[in-house]
Each structure stands twice: as C-alpha cells, then as structure tokens.
Amino acid sequence: MDAQRIAVDAIVALTDCDREAAIAFIRKFYLAGVRDPKRLTFKGLQALRS
Image (cartoon, rainbow, N blue to C red; front, side):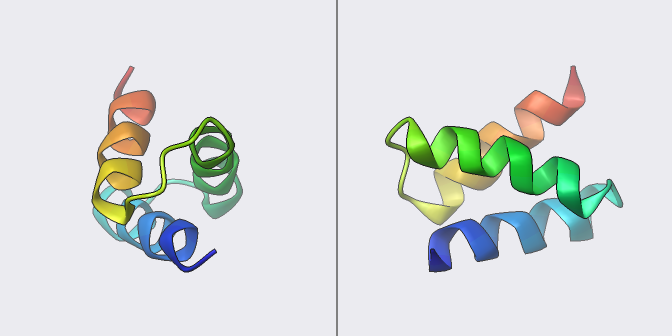
C-alpha cells in the first residue's frame, strides 16, 4: 500500500492531474503485479501522457 501512495503522490505532484484518476491507474498496475514505487510512477506517467 505504501508503494501505491508514493506513486500517486509523485504523479499528482508532477502532472497536477486529478488524484482519483492517478489512484485508478496505479491501482490497476499494482493489481497486475507491479510493486516497485518507481515502476508504478513511471507506468502511471506513461498512461497519463497518452
């Protein structure tokens, strides 16, 4: 759970996107097996970019 919080905080700080949208992206990747906060942040930023 800590990895998700770190990734969401980083994405919101970097992009000023909606916190709920970031949580939805991160939760999806976390449930898919990505547990590293840096990897979650990277994947979340990629998803929000497109």
